[in-house]
Length: 204
Image 1 (cartoon, rainbow, N blue to C red):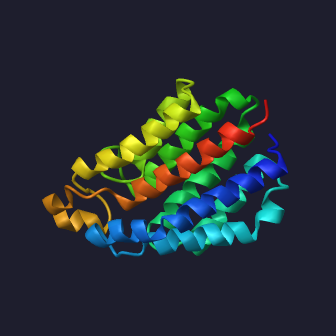
Image 2 (image 1 turned 135 degrees about the vertical axis):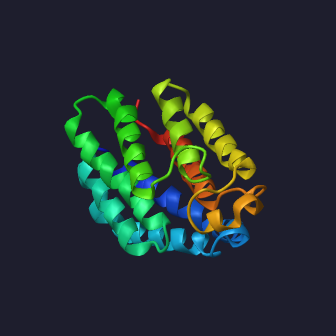
């Protein structure tokens, strides 16, 4: 499975731009229930991936995803690095097993389940899983890219009503309620950036 180099390079760039533009906002969300560095950590990871763009964008898609995932693990601090890294590395591994692009949603489901195991968390625990699972469900239902964006953004907002069960935020107990999860927010930002880019640039 091969992604067009220009397409993959563009996706890397729009993800970097989205995180950079919202880094302060993500840090503000994280200060309310965590260490306050999610935005800067994510920005560092996206910049590290961007630095490898020329190499990564010429790899077959499974290899590219694995390479990006490893870069994120090595460059993002806190819990986000291992979680986002696991997501992409597992996506790459799963895509190697599949022959048809319509199985992309199945590969994503397997990768998200791997993230859940890595973080020992579930949907409803106020994590990025609360965006990833709804996005995967929308993809499996062949929703439009616009609908997937809406689903991601709504799912991130809904974490505000949840009690954190994992990470530093879990120590706050009920006091974590009322705050949007920063990991869910960054996940929605990335999903939005990817979908909007694909709407304009994906091959027919």
